[in-house]
Image 1 (cartoon, rainbow, N blue to C red):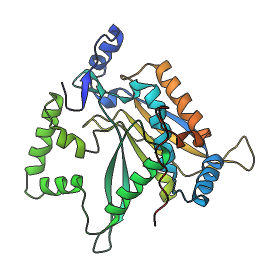
Image 2 (cartoon, one colour):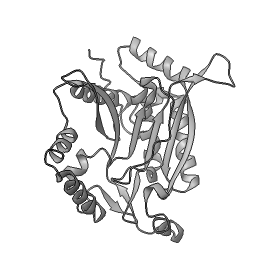
Image 3 (cartoon, rainbow, N blue to C red):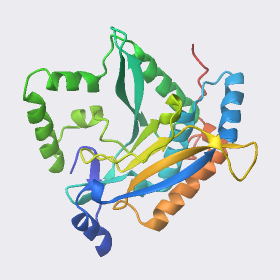
Length: 282
């Protein structure tokens, strides 16, 4: 048993066979594009800000994705060494731009863990807190420190990452390493709209357990509705974790929640009372 998931048993013969037919994640990648209604998202974000709630495109997208994944749990499966696992937590990774102490631009990766009782507000707060900590020029998160250590001695990086890959393939990678690895994640999200760039189809990494990569592109005019804008989404999926109909149901739910972001203000698992909303901090 892996530290981050449990082996899935009782799969149909064809599903069990897929990781042998397509042993690598890049063998099994499917590409798709979708669109989110930018007018709905923008109006919702502005309204929440007027109410004192700091909500962003990233937090709305992550909340909608997680809510849809709770209803379609196979989207939180992953494949390692030809075996299908159910992840025992949910998290998402994303990249932020920061400036080094010498003024040069740099990137760092953040991973956020979510819980069923989360709302779009608690996710927004968690994302803001993580970004605030990591934007400090002198700050390096655990992932950065691990990478710096690995590259501090010539030849050490090859040994460290080779060993990590080998241990991961056999389910022996420690949870502590998994938790700091941005490549061991339920979904990797990239926001190219933040740098005014069109969306891309980003590959899912062979190292780690990323089964879905979601890219937000800069909003564009809706060719079917004059005056409206839409945000394109580039999606790359590992087809071995779910069937076509299961992916279809997931993305139908995902799109439904993006069209009604107010539903994300309640517990994402639909149970109990909503978590206390957190007011915007400066």
